[in-house]
Amino acid sequence: MQLTNKVALVTGASGGGMGRSIALTLAREGADIILNYRSNEERAREVGAAIESLGRKAFIHRADTEDPDAVQAMVQAGEAHFGHVDIAVCSAGGKWKPQEFVDIEPDHWRAVMRGEVDSAYGLIRATLPGMRKRGWGRIVMIGGLLADDWPYGPPDGPLDYPLGKAARHWLARTLGPRERPNGITINAVAPGPIEYIELEEALRLVKEDPSGEITPQHTAEIVAFLCSERASLVSGAVIPVRGSDEV
Image (tube, rainbow, N blue to C red; front, side):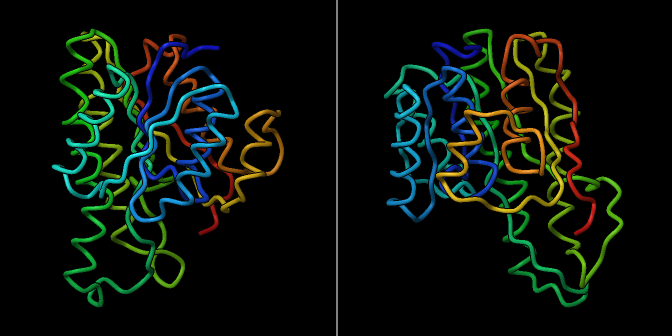
């Protein structure tokens, strides 16, 4: 296992998408998990039980990732529980809602930017000091395939959501090289559209070869690699997971 004695905080880890598969995969690799959820505690506890079935510890914490103060409190709670936070994965994001640019209401626009940009800002800001102090850290953000040169518009795709994903790519490219001398890598993984799966399927895939039809596990495997020592020289990268380019 690559991540023994490491602690990973994964936001958006209680849903049916990539965050949950990432949390399970990092647990498979030996990390204990700080499991973030926003509203559904029962579902978070089910994921926590799945993590423990893999032989790791799960610390479940409710936090609105759009609120930097709530993220700071979550990181502090995780540090109090485990002693340190070595890995931070920003998976929770904004809402996918295709509509014409002039039809985007200000409240929706701000909500998407909070979900994509503020959540990444808050997580990086809260975890960097401890990582710098220990001289080791891994930060991975979930971006979006083609977000930097977005070819879609409504009704096929939104215009605000990929802007938030592109901002995450920018953060990785800008901050990654700056933090590498501190023993910290910051990268982004940019997956295309991937269907949600049930928890049982996610737990099965984490134990098997993920080759074949695209699933959240393909993204999770790349995140696990970026969190490992094998990727210690990779910082500032945005790695695409192509799947389907169809929106």
